[in-house]
Amino acid sequence: MFLTNLMGIKDKPVEMQKAWLYEEHGPKEVLRLGEFPLPILKHNQLLVQVRAAALNPFDCKIRQRPIAPIELPAVPGCDMAGVVVEKGSGVTKFDIGDEVYANIQDSSSEDGKLKQLGTLAEYIAVEENLAAKKPENISFEEAASLPLAVQTAMEGFKTGGFKEGQTVFIVGGAGGVGTLAVQLAKHFYEASLVVATTSTAKVEFVKSLGADRVVDYTKTRYEELEDKFDLLYDTIGTIFTTFQFICILEEFLRAILCDTENSFVVAKDNAPIIDITWPPSNPKAIYSGLTVSGDILEKLRPYLESGKLKAVIDPTGPYHFVDVVEAFRYLETGRARGKVVISAFPS
Ligand SMILES: NC(=O)c1ccc[n+]([C@@H]2O[C@H](COP(=O)([O-])OP(=O)(O)OC[C@H]3O[C@@H](n4cnc5c(N)ncnc54)[C@H](OP(=O)(O)O)[C@@H]3O)[C@@H](O)[C@H]2O)c1
Image 1 (tube, protein in one colour):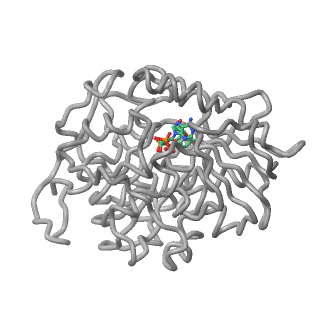
Image 2: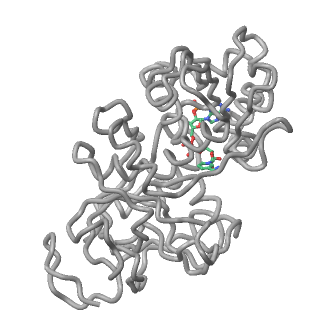
């Protein structure tokens, strides 16, 4: 395959590229920086030179266990922002040189398989319907942080039938999905009351995202809260809490203190209880997944351009491409503030 002389890329035959990959499932130590073949483009795909990527708990879960069909060796990563360097013959919406961003992993694709080549690589292939043009006012790092988390955040409100002006209680306002759910509740749905939970050190941070009130789950139990809400939106669930159990005693205590399973007590009678983790945290909860599509990103463009919706990058990052294992280590503490982003890709 030949890459054209665009964006400083030299005319040279390129068949292999640098990528993070794993050949067996397991902890982050199975990851290694190696070489992976460049993809052969399908008619509806873009070849994108990755400028920034973001990590998601899903990347950890699928690396740890084969929870979805994927061929090994696999390159992890769903989210990216970058520049189009080639396009398939059927691509109509994008041109070479366009700055784009996407969640490239659509498990509802024809074969139901995840792409073997994820976004922690120099170049990736993505179907044009999954991508959107990057708003000019946001950086590659900010754009890369958004797709999977914002698609999930939006889907939760849709699944819960949330309507403009209603009230919402968000369990977990500080994480990748939670930071966006708080902002969407306030600025997209113009909710009349947005209350979110977090631990003490992040209370002011979650308020700064637009939450009307923030509940410090290390000090307040759900039963002590007086308001009842039109939607209970759980971004933490029990799986995630269990995930934290394996860490240290502090996490054990947090899990007992926050007791996310009990959060339903703040929902109004018959109000939907949405949980984005599987299995849902209590029998009344409805699981909400995500729709992987560039259209959702386009729909949110005016909010990103006006600054009503802001990407939130964890302050420990962006991590350099060579520090991917350290970035995963940090994400797996369960304490990320917004999104863990990787940038400074090799090419
Ligand atoms: N259904 C789907 O399609 C879908 C899509 C995306 C994500 N998910 C799942 O949703 C979960 C969250 O994803 P994420 O990307 O937002 O994770 P994340 O960014 O790693 O979340 C980290 C945040 O969780 C907060 N947190 C941890 N325990 C908490 C608790 N008990 N109460 C309140 N906040 C708590 C932490 O804040 P503190 O330090 O203040 O506790 C931290 O800021 C994961 O299990 C992920 O796999 C599902």
